[in-house]
Amino acid sequence: MGSPFTLIKKDLNTKARLGRLVTPHGVVETPCFMPVGTQGTVKAVLPRDLHELGCQILLGNTYHLYLRPGHERIRQLGGLHRFMNWPGPILTDSGGYQVFSLGAMRKITEDGARFQSHIDGSSHLLTPEKAVAIQEALGSDIAMVLDECIPHDAARSYVRESTERTIRWAERCLNARNRPAQLMFGIVQGGMFEDLRRSCVDALSVMDFEGFAVGGLGVGEGEEKLNTVGAATVDLLPENKPRYLMGVGRPQDLIHAVRAGFDMFDCVIPTRNGRNGTLFTWQGKVSIKRAEYADDARPLDESCGCYSCSNFSRAYLRHLFMAGEILSAQLNSLHNLYFYHRLMDKCREAIRDGRPEPWAELVKFAQAS
RNA sequence: GUGAGUGUAGCUCAAGUGGUUAGAGCACUGGAUUGUGGUUCCAGGGGUUGAGGGUUCAAGUCCCUUCACUCACC
Image (cartoon, rainbow, N blue to C red):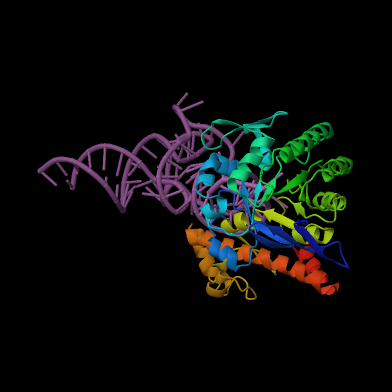
């Protein structure tokens, strides 16, 4: 059995790569964007619509599905794919980000991360072994190792200590595997320190992972550090395996990261910002709640082929938002995900094309954003 | 008609015995949101304190007149 990842083409003008990742539930063309479906659903979007807009792979979450409805229940019901009626590939995050985002509600030890449930306050210990067992029960195509996502301004001494623990956890995750068909990705930490990033890559890259992720970015460090640390880290990763930049980002961040050599992305921005009234277009961000759109009969983006732009006016989208209607979240999320997928289409086309012109357009868009 | 009560921001309400530039929540306006708690955070515009007169160094607050609304009773 060969490697699940095939590097199809390296761009001549940038470090971007065109690839193909084979998973048990289908093939993913990279660079790709993964919509976030934390709780077994991409909020406000039907699986049918995700498929229609070109979505290839979704992200689910270990921590959330473990707490509710429970991974054993999902296993009994035929696994996460069947449970949420998404037949395509699914990558599951390990719960490492919740180590970061739940802040005061968790405690880290060598053994694992102890969480206080945000639902009922009950206490749970998530160990590397348990994170793997949960992801195997969910039946995801790609499992992520348990890591600790640290704040961008963490002191060097803590970053070092934490990153070394994350490396030990990665090894424990590998040893806990029981389903060879499920791919597993290691996660590079190291904060904003390039030497710590490098030693983390050195330690992880000799382990038998099918891909590598870069974590701990897009957590408030700012655009410049995101780009420089991201680019420096991705350069160190093995060329023949997929490289995933976790949790990033804005359209301009994705363009920079693809050009730096990343293959996979996930981010809540298109769905969360959509629900909160921020929409992405090729002319830039549009805050649909603005009063200036109250009487605007034009579609959000004339050049967009999504269901929302094909059928509704800005005035209607604003009305739905101001009225707090459920359809607002649906139409906005659908549009933003459509936009993100067309953005990734353009990146793949630029690599196939091989000329600098398509990149020039994308960079121009990124700079204007 | 008589008696009582209430009038402060678009809405609901605060502002001890008179004392800085009348505040808050919601709403509205603008901005933020990066491995999601259907949010949250930041900033801003808004007032002739129903109207008129009086007392006082000083009135949303006390007095008089008037208007509106609410309730009770003829």
